[in-house]
Image (cartoon, rainbow, N blue to C red; front, top):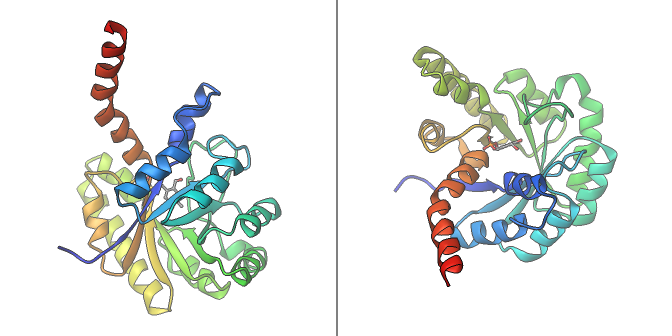
Length: 244
Ligand code: PXP
């Protein structure tokens, strides 16, 4: 057995399926309970400005029901800081947010908005919330995250995941080196080191092997595989009900 890495399961895309029909199933709250029972160390969810997947109702119920940690991903806005201070998740992850993006495309640019980020970090930390910042694996951004008082940085693994999906071995190596260097630097200056975005059953291992990384947040691939693994059971059950 390797060392223990905390697994944060991101349940946003359960809500994506629910919201596609504006109905009540599948309920991300149920998904969070199942993930919790199955061994997730943390439930991660991103309440976006446009509420395109999870919303405050989901966040509050999940916070009240599950026994593992709750990690709220959120933009650096007064509205979101207010929600975090009200619900008090174990941890907040500050992320950039653009309305038109399909998912969080890059890390937060802390360097260009240090005062704004520092102010949010201070408010959240004074309420006892652990503050993590999602950033690109870049030394200057990591240094800026430390300067504004973050407890942790989550290294964006999207570029590594893209290179992996394209079978571009050279870029995979380059992106892994970038992640390794960033992880070592972040730890050296006193930050906790996490990683996430685009991680799948196939590409997760090399990232999990980076020794400084203590937490991974994974969503899309887990939910995608859950649909496929569960489909046979669901079809058989519908057939049984039809046939009586
Ligand atoms: N970490 C952060 C900060 C994210 O914004 C996301 C996507 O919501 C993830 C991890 C999970 O990414 P994925 O769904 O690609 O596993």
